[in-house]
Length: 274
Length: 302
Image 1: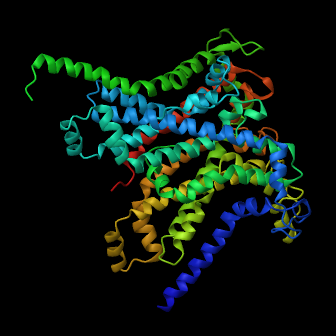
Image 2: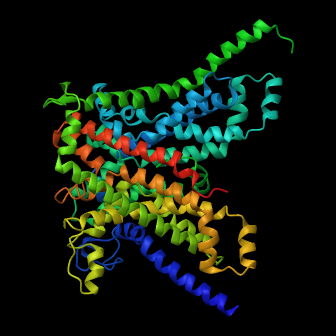
Image 3: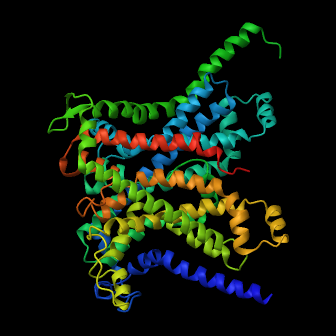
């Protein structure tokens, strides 16, 4: 008994140290966003606010970059990609599982193959296409390339495959057509998988960096991710304000990770996303 | 249910085309934004580029031969390789260490589990900007802490010998959350009866971890090595935000080099950049093939 308690103490000690080290950037991001320049710009810098709290860091961040409109752009981009991916994946996964699809194996291979092509390797033609269509600085330009996903289709297919066939047959006997069955039975019953896909789509869309950097030029139309990285280069002398911008960009995904963790884990090992 | 055979055949044929209609929305997106760009990338990589960024005619494999005789590009490949090793290995090792710690049955594990997953919420931009503040040589916290130990100010991001390590360190941090979620899920799914049997046989602590748990989570570890390698190869944001590829190109990875050739300073060197993009694609495809073909069979699967 005693050795067990001693073992626990050691475990707590190690966990505590690892906790402090690993979570320090999170702590400093949050606390630093409320610290004034007298704290952040002295040397050695303060580790907690010693000269008062500075919530005005947040209003300064909002003043220097058009964070408000960037927030809207990010929300629009995220919702667009999430809804688009859900719709295209639901339809495709439904066909793969429930419909008499000709060349099923071939089409499935086509969908899977999209997961093996890194977007960075085809980003140049995508950029040339979007700019030749005049879609730079638009929500359409930010979302169009990502409205379908092999990963999402695969995730939903796995979930649909475990759908009880008796229910499907019962619905058919009752005269439910494809769309009736799909939207009033299958979709409501597959909510956990749809939530998993939705959260993954939202996380990766909100956090995107490379594509929004290319697809936008006007600061007003940039996403918040690009905005905060400009904030850093435009005012490196006020870390508190820069960190305030970071916190604003971080807030939605922090909520998703804290409250949606079980859905995230569900999507984890299904495929190489992120 | 007695339908004339011909009618059923016609309906099934109609059904088969109808079924394809459900794939069309996704296929259109894939066609326009993945497969056509893929063809276009190959075409661009065998063409020259004029100063305005327009293709200037077929040049064959000139871009490729230029690549592999360009010492700068060989450095890029080396940096990419080093960056991958420096990020994948530590991020998995640290996550595994934490995951095993969280396996012990102690109070507050749920809290720690959620807390350690927080880095997962950070985007490459948010994490990089925070690390930029921490790395600041004049007033950053890292140098502040080191000063208590009497260490002089370290130029984390501008010292050519150190910059890649610093960027890798930040990247390791970004990866820990994801790796931890995968490993925790794997550990959580271990068969309790096997663990119990091992404990009854007197295996405990390290012995249990090394002989029982490790072999059982090799699928997760293998998955993380593959996903982590591909993910590291695609890294871009942290380099652009922290070092802009410098100092002396010491942090210019393959993807950053593509960006530099094609987009930075209005370079518009699309042909040369596309050849590099094809090298990236090839590397990722080889890793994927290795995953599916060779190694997957050797990993211990239950």
